Length: 339
Length: 256
Ligand SMILES: Nc1ncnc2c1ncn2[C@@H]1O[C@H](COP(=O)(O)OP(=O)(O)OP(=O)(O)O)[C@@H](O)[C@H]1O
Ligand SMILES: [Mg+2]
Image 1 (cartoon, rainbow over the protein chains, first blue to last red):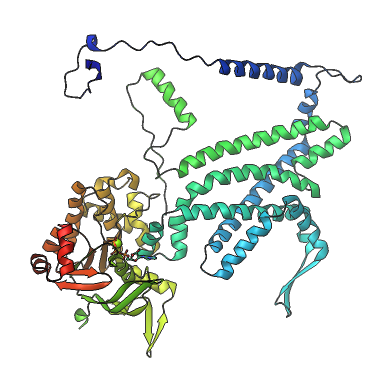
Image 2: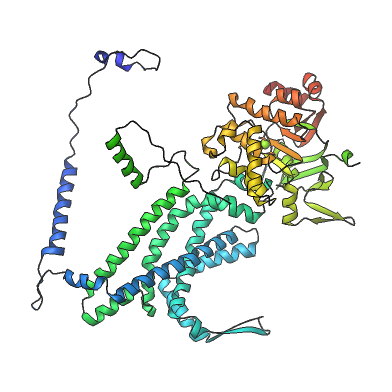
């Protein structure tokens, strides 16, 4: 055995550099297929850039690039498009809030000991997961024709309030209703998986402190389930943002609706769809970043050290660069109050 | 008069899980200030009995009372009424429980683990609860860990926090379910020390344990359970020195 293989301990005197073997110099393994794949991708990328930017229009009465980016540019911040963006955000936020709340409620019902309660929750999920959202959207939009006046009261008995459905269930709210009922079904499965993943001992410890089922769920189980619930909920939010485009079918003035509407007048369908895509991409990108930080926050307690955020990583690298690697940085999380 | 009421009184307690009968007529009394150690082979029903005292499980037959109050039921004109969820919670709030696997709340700091019970269940003010938490942590020798999270603590430290968390509710009875079995041998002592101090201060304790040294030195009484029944009970020093029951002898030969 050579000296270099001996374990080094702190108190053993460090042997001089002479005994240290020279750093390994070996010929690396070649990866020819990586090169081939790389070249193919570069060519494809160049073709894409060429056709997007440089290829010229082949239509006789048009000049400039085939994609006519100037048209995209002139519509991207136009008032109707902006109005559509705002409504898309509103639809997403409202539908997600209602959907997540419904999801938690249905998940808890699903875990109830009462067969009737857990059965109803199961039926809800079965129905809304088993029918297309677009069908549900049309359904809620046209339901007001079936119930022009919705009356609340005891079945077969007296009624208390009467609601004019045409006034209340506007296209916007029909859309929200459809989107959130559908979302609730998916979210309930996510929440349920999260709740089940929490160790049973947690609930028992909470009960042994005298916490009721509700408190134990709210203060102990759900916060821990969050770690599993948050990542798919982020995906659901991103997915919801895109799904809102379906309510253009019932004339809700969101992003896709106005993009189509403008295109129907100027016949620039591709350009208007590019406008819409840019906005959707911008919004989903922002959501993905938010999701990253949320996941990081809820990872607390499960691991001893959190990975640095990209921003912290940059800051750390800069500091290394300026000050040298003298100081080791520890990033403590801000204290979170639970009261 | 009230001092005569035992802290725990079990009369002919039966409990089954499906077809499996786990407790087959348990009779026992724990006096105020008594430290009772419960020993027995795995599966003999020790945890189940502790969980019945805290109403984490319902008993099938017999009576079980804590401090003169039936656990989980109210008796009125010879009829038993199930207690409401809220009443069960208030019974549990008076009984501290320490688990084999600590069951600290991993998403809360040590301080919040200790204050969450007093604040959210007893309605104590946050400031008071925090003062109390600091005092309790000092008592279990972990003052410097007040801001740590459970995952940053060793097993022994976690268990001491779990004891502090239970004590924060000012329980009149403490239940310990094998509090040191999940610990590395060198960490057992620190937890037993805290428990010994607690016993010296007069806390009523029921301790399921395999630590015969603790049972001998700290225990006021020892109960040997086997197959859902109590086989032997009495003074731990006498029983351990001179076990009468054959099963107990073979059990001790395995544990010691
Ligand atoms: N919730 C439950 N459902 C079904 N069976 C159970 C349940 N809890 C306990 N049992 C069974 O009851 C028996 C007694 O369990 P218990 O946990 O009381 O034993 P124990 O004496 O504490 O054993 P150990 O020393 O291993 O902790 C075991 O056979 C166990 O499998
Ligand atoms: Mg047990």
